[in-house]
Length: 180
Image 1 (cartoon, helix red, strand yellow):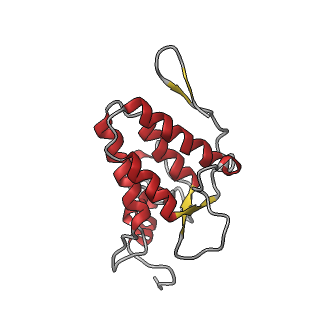
Image 2 (cartoon, one colour):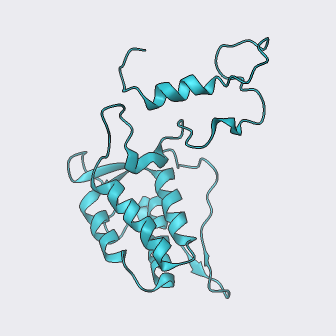
Image 3 (cartoon, one colour):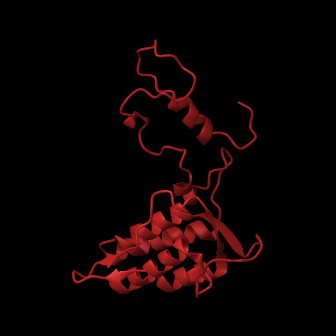
């Protein structure tokens, strides 16, 4: 649940890192899209943030869902699976937005990610839901502060080769079940 403090800022319930965030949400697709449609192009930033914080609290605790966003039914065309941690990340971005334009931008991104799957012929990555792929590094691979110790390589090579480069290539340019 969210509260407004005296500085007109929204205080959010914090959660422990990793606490229930690895679960996938089973969202009622039509109801969630309808809710987002009603919020897009909102003119009042504070009202929008309060409504988004309500959705955030439902995502964190589905038992509190009194508006039908979380589906309790079978997997079919009326539901969509979504990573809880990715959803929280997007909702937090909306809540921390300083302008209504930026908040609406994030809402439109969320809407598009729920509406259709955007893949290509090279891989199975849904480009509209890229936040859900934790193993794919979207930044520079030179962010490692020391030599990478993952994988099977020895420490005798002193060059600048990063073992993550071939791994990232395989993740990005292959489909599930492809032979490498």
